[in-house]
Image (tube, rainbow, N blue to C red; front, side, top):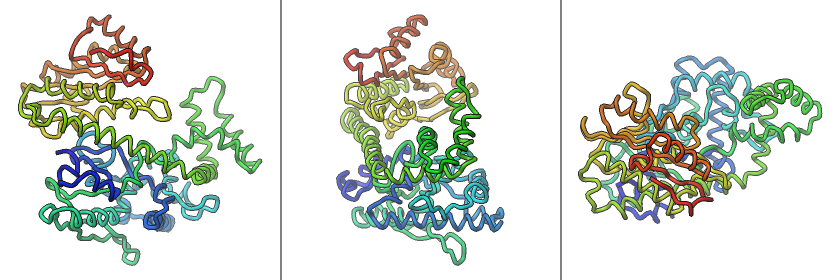
Length: 483
């Protein structure tokens, strides 16, 4: 059983009515909490959560500027483990990430005494936003802010889960759990623990998360979006002197031959010089807040279709009751799952999840996650990014030393695809002491298909069953694809 509803015997519709995402208790799904959805929510409880996040960050700002962030204080106030029990995030395998380490803590403390000294006291925007801390380079990235947000609202998530569990699950499915770092006491300046009755699976408790505060890929306020809007941002500055200074600073760093990456770096250096631009960007995002909810709801729905509905169809429809999970060769097992992904993407409109606003989002990581979920009930070991001495391979599927196979996922647009086809699987297979490997290549256009087939032909690899092509292009579905 893969999903919360299956493991705990509740109808998926019951979770839907409660508003919780039906998580997979096998592997993280690529969703995370967007603080902006808390800020702009119609529900007062979410707006209150956002206020509490900002209150804590202002507390940290004041401690940093008072030079009170000693090593002990940083350990108590800024070092957090990843909340792995929500089964959401960026882990390739399982649900364990790296958490918020010293690098993040020191970077945040440093930023709150320098470029973000006025955090919490902004006048241009409707409120303060923790995402602002990740808009500049400096050690505070998307993954960090996601983990930090989840830790700061962990008490709410635990109570949200407990209320559902007590009402819908059997008593024997619950366990009283003492969870640390749940509430922050501003009088004692310490995090406090709490006891909750929570769903328990395997050797750990489980946390549910409301769909309406989740998104995928990027939060509504993010660095990539800010940089892409940099031209409009600097042109729309109401202060003429500031606009002239910003334009001069940026244009002096580039020329006609500057690459996109060089222009991006120039834009970030300009924004770091004129930090007022951060608030102008955030103000624009606040003014278009309604789009944040529409886009996030769409992303969450697509994730549900891709990683819940499609994979459940595989498990309950095609594989249940078969010998698929009971015995077999690792190569055959792997190949059948790869072929199922091909079927879902090509024949069941699964390709749609690789597009945003009609443009392809070429993500090998989506294929990785879908592939991993199909191995929920198997005697095989399925390990991601196995490195046996010659570089990491996407997956190694094994049952003992002599029954092992490697699976690689590549995009046809990869500039080194030909060399990879020729050498990579063979090299990894030798390092892993197995001779079996499967190469999965996803393409989005006829031009990419032609590139792949040309490479296969020149390398005399045509017609091999261990090289599987997946057509993720919406314009060439009638052309068919080959394996």
